[in-house]
Length: 416
Picture 1 (cartoon, rainbow, N blue to C red):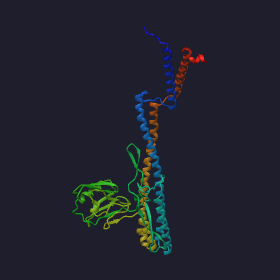
Picture 2 (picture 1 turned 45 degrees about the vertical axis):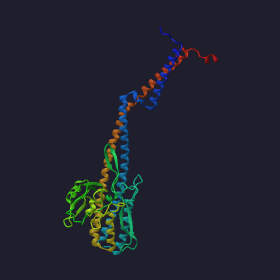
Picture 3 (picture 1 turned 90 degrees about the vertical axis):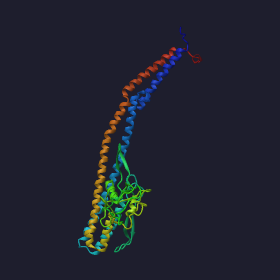
Picture 4 (picture 1 turned 180 degrees about the horizontal axis):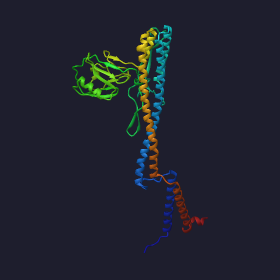
């Protein structure tokens, strides 16, 4: 026979009250957090699904922010290129007027002064800041001014004028992720946007008997090209042409040296990989690796292909000389090449922005869908939750009322 202690009703009543208090507290937490999963043990399967959905949703939100950043960046780049295009159009108009033979030499020199100021305007655009307050056309060296003006005296000019514009930006660009394993190049370097001619670099070193003495690699426009011991010039040419670098390699018929030709208007960047074979130096293409991004061509190499600044400076100098033949032929041709490249770069940046816009539309559909799936696993029906809460609260109050009647009086009762 079991003995019933006089403490058992008290203990049992306390257990029931604490249990109902816990139920009330749980219901309050679910309503305040709008989630039915306060602990993983509440529903392990739903919790595992919710964790995956929540992680996926966080990635989608990050991708959405990246598309917004990229979209504004591309729009600013587009606007700057439009500004450069307008300036080049004005320079071309001046060139056409200067070449028609109806202007006096003084009139042409006045046009040259205007061209000099327009070149400064182009440099201002090339050094413009993006929406993130970083240099727009510096590549991945976003705090470096990409173009630097060098001034001096020019024959026929009555004042200090621009003698050259040096590029100091970097070739590599930042990339932004707009989807799982989907990246888009964020930057457009000044060595692409503000170039006019396709570059040609012809080595004067006869490399008919060249053999690579050790394994190594070199970079063309940031693309790594590996070289094995014993590689000859024809095999190196083939490797360059098979790579993703925007250049075409060949062997010059006269010098029997390596020839690099850009497939589009841009500054070709060439470097030997540190700690390996010195292929490009041995072939007479470069003197050494770049320092502060300055051109590093071998002094004996034949280098051709200039920037839009070079084209405008050549035109201005022709105006100062009064050389109408040069202005009407090479001068206008150089500006036309500059306009063609700017138009090509505008199409490039517009296509990137369009891709980002489509990615943003896709994310705008995916984020609500994933949010709905997450809510299905974790969310609560507020009306049902409030009803359950009132039931639990009523049960708790009923237990408290019953306990007040059934539990024996305490010492505090008599002290009152």
